[in-house]
Image (cartoon, rainbow, N blue to C red):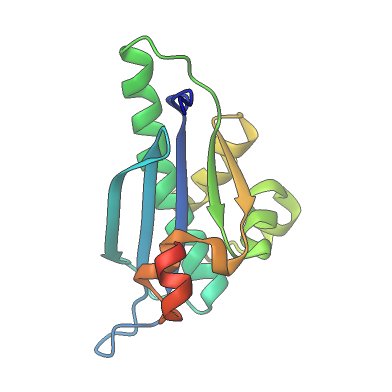
Length: 154
């Protein structure tokens, strides 16, 4: 049966492994980026700063991934593809709130200003940050030990 190919839309999935490095307690950021539902980037990197909670580690990770998605949006625009807000999904609802609510953001002034760029990307409709249940987040493959069945589903 013939099915129409998916649109060339960008999407991203984000997670972080909190305080994973035993030497300096830095967290690991992970993202998976898709174009037309095909994986184009799987990236795992130690964060430059020490996070004080899982929420903050994921917020840092989502901010870094937002910059990657923004670059891809510009590249696709140069190739004459229509630019639409790219969904960026995480399994932490509080992080989604932080990207949409400036009142919450002011409570986290200790986080580097560069990390808060994600708020501006969401506000300017360049990115949309979405909640995704943990068992549906493909980025969890890189940060959590998953049951075999869930691993193969993702």
